[in-house]
Length: 227
Image 1 (cartoon, helix red, strand yellow):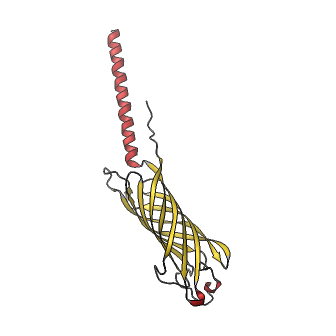
Image 2 (cartoon, helix red, strand yellow):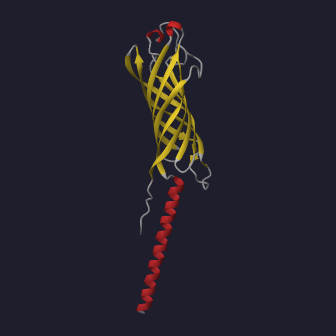
Image 3 (cartoon, rainbow, N blue to C red):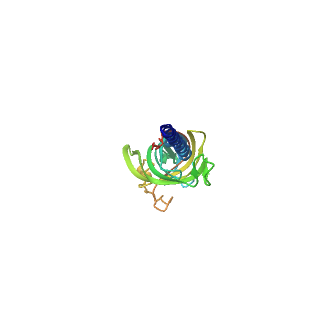
């Protein structure tokens, strides 16, 4: 009778250990498929141009732009992004030429059209996804040799691609509608000659076309617990 009791206890303990192991393995696999990392950090580069009093043409006089970004993923569809970009705008003719350097900081919310993850078991899971974004930003630049800090409305579209376990590619077209009309940095362009009309608010807008590489960080821990 004592022997049978010991065998029964060993059997129950073995069964319990197996169940715990299976549960933890399932948990690890589930989180690995869903979202192993919560965030990304990376760099970007491309070109910039502006629409305003001196230019009404898309992609006219593009200049180099570069910066960095941080993205936090809430799930496979929604994310938040903080981005810094440094660019310059040039335009004008003769005595109305200008060249102004701009520092841009944006905080945006993003929506992916597909579940961005490497999980073949989900119907809408993809290793790529187009996305849209909108947010709030700020720019600093010189206006008549005085430093200006002005709010802006960033919005645009992009494409994300997972390159591997932790690397990602981002191609993005961003527009930033300035809450002002002095991005050129010279008073001559501040509607003195009634040149406004590039957009319905008659404000200047900075646009960038960039490609970025990001690296996944902040690995998500499995919440498995024993019985």
